[in-house]
Structures are given as structure tokens and as C-alpha cells.
Image (cartoon, rainbow, N blue to C red):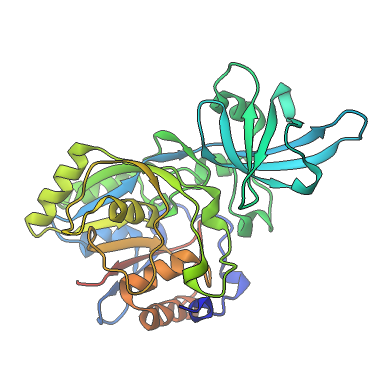
Length: 349
């Protein structure tokens, strides 16, 4: 499909630079099949969902993966190098997107603050670099010392990250370090909301998908068939898979909280819709025409024009329907992107 089919006009003032407080006071647009749009708040979720529904959260934790350093080359002045880690390779090596990469050669050393350094080993076809960190300390410890929170570019272009973001950009479920972007649909949840969901008979499960910086990359191809997703590592335990399969067999709805949860569930599902245990990379790219196998709904924020995530929600609800949804959201002053408002998409409500 032509990428231009997923374009729409978004006023820049609709981009949220901070989350609302409390988090569950954000707006939530409920879209059920062909039903009229229902303007709600996230705190209304226990009243909107059914007893027995299962919400599936991503428990990844964002690491301070943004690094600013200097290339070290004998006989040459230093060059400023920026690196955003996006995927772990092994204990000491990460794949990274590098700013000012034309000034970098394989084998050169990059010095970051506080004694942290890495060797630029090789450049991949997509332009990213493999960085091998020096020393014996875990890379996560080095990042805590020298790194910064990697805010999405559409926020970072308008303001610098600060101490508030260290809390604002982590979800209530963040347990397993490894993501360089938050699973932002879950940013809206609070302990009070979780208690009310439990009281309403709504179950919860968690999986892990370490979100990579590739989630922010624009689609440069003119046709979706020519776009390649970056791989991300994810895990679903056998126990979680069993409980989700039981829920669906009993006719209860499985609702992914965020596109990251949805993409991993669909990666783990076989042709019959059975969710299998999973511990591997996924580069699944969902566009209209895809047959969903593992989920019955999606809670997600509002996404970029021509992005892979807008293509995903268009696959779930229909492209024309989602263009109408986004037009309604813009007209009614919903806030967009990572710190913005939410939508609840129920194709078979």
C-alpha cells in the first residue's frame, strides 16, 4: 500500500510535551466497531470494560540510552558523537544509532562522560553501529552514570529532558531494564486505577518487549512493502500464554495495552490463534489486510502521520475509520504521542 494513504494533517499544538496529572485523568476516546465515538477519560476504564476482560501490559523498563561523547583519533581533533542505543547484542555490545556517524570509522574509540568509553566495531546496512563498551561493569551501570533518558524526537526537538522525565517516562509496570522507549499506552495507569480494575473483575497479565529506537524512525519508503522494521527482543512465559489462551477459550476479551504488547502477542500466536511461549526477536510489521489472531482490542495513544503505528491501528479498525477517529481527536483537542491522551479500540465490541 502507498504510505501516503496514512497521512493526515496534525497541528503542532496537539503534541503533548508533558503528561497530565494524575495520569489516569487523560482523555480516552472509545471506538467500538461502527458505534459512535465515546469521549471518556482513562479513569473510566473499569466502567467501559467487561468483567473477565484481560489487559496485557509490557513490563519493560526504559534505560538512559542517550549518550553524548567524543571520537578519539590519533593525530586528529575530536569529533562530537551522539549515540542512542536501541538493541542489546550481548553483555557488552549494543546496536546504536549514531549522530555525526560520517566522522566515525570502524575500530575507533568514543569517550563518553565519567570514564565511560566504547569501541565502534562495525556499521550495519541500516546505518546503525555496533558499540562495544569497555570495562567490566555492567553496561546498565555505565549508562546510569553517563546516559540520559531518550525522549522521543518530537518532544526532544522542543525541549530538553529533565529530572521529571526520569519518572514521567516510566510506566507503573516497568521491571525489566532494556527499552530505549516507553510502552506509552501504559503511562496512564495509576495504583488507584489498577485497584478499581481488579475490583471490577478485570484481569491483568504482563509480557516483555524491549522497545527499540527504531519505533521513532520515519517510514522513508513510498510503499509499505518496501519498509523494513527493526527487530526487538520479547518474551512471553508459558504461564502467561496458558492463562491468555484459557481466557480466549472462555470467550473473554484479551486487550493489549499498547502496540508493543499487541505486536508481541501477534508474533507469538500460531495460525489457530493459540499464543505460544516466546523468547526471541520480532520484526512484525502490521498493515491493513493483516488477520489478527491473538487480541480482541487495543488501548493506545495517538500516533504520527504515515507511521508504522498508525498503519497498525488502521489494520485493526480500518483506514477510513481511523482517519475519522483522528479527525475527531484533533477537533476535540486530544493530546498526541507519548505524553498524550489515549484511545480504546474494540473492533468487535
